[in-house]
Structure formats: C-alpha cells, structure tokens
Image (cartoon, rainbow, N blue to C red):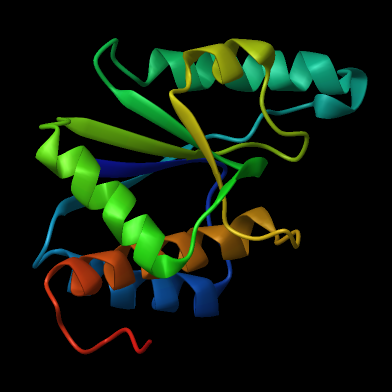
Length: 157
C-alpha cells in the first residue's frame, strides 16, 4: 500500500519541515509514503470561498486516479484514537488497498465534488490547527500507527 498526504501549498516553516522529515525517514521502514504539495491558488481576493474551493478541487482531481481511495482530513470527520487509527490503516492494508490519499484542504475546506469523491473523513481533533501544523501531526500519527501495528514500543497506553 502507498499512502500520500496531499496538501494545498508548501510547508515553509523550518521547524515543521524538520519535524516532518524526522517522521518521513522513520516511515520508510513501514510503508511507501509521499507528500504531494499542490500550488496555492493565486489572486484569490477576487474569488468567493466557493470559487476557491472549486478551483482547489480541480487541482486535486487532476492529481488522483480513479482507483485511489480519498480520505479527507476534515473537522467533521470521524474521530479516532491512535490505536483506532492504526486499526483503520491495518484494515485498509488487509483489504489490499493500493493507494490511500489523505487530503488537507485549503483555508475554506473542500468543495462538494471532493466530498462526493472521498470514501471517508477523519478529524485529527475537535480543535482547529493551521494547515501547516496538520501535516506534521498527521505524519507523526501515521508513524505511530505503524509502530502500534508492529507492536513496537513507541506508543504508550
């Protein structure tokens, strides 16, 4: 299975990049994992929120295939503990899912087209985090999930 974290815009803060790199290196031992950063929209001041979401949807849909399973990182998604998330990933691997794509939306969330295309929604927290920080938090949680699956001592109950 391959896991991709698809985001709108680049991560620019050095401390976040360093943290992401730390967990991306660790993840190589468990799964093929990639971060796909799509370019931010330009000249958005003249666009409504719906227009921005629609344009972001076009970018997202151009970069996925029909067989990819899309999972939205969305505040209204299901909330899982780290152990439950590891079970979620393990179930996907057991079902021979080829490609999971987790998507972090833009500042206004996702368009209806993306909601319709997605198979599931997961919330990382009931709190709101910056789109930049979510990337690090999510990558660490994927790493944590694989250590749980493998019975390694990273996660403490």
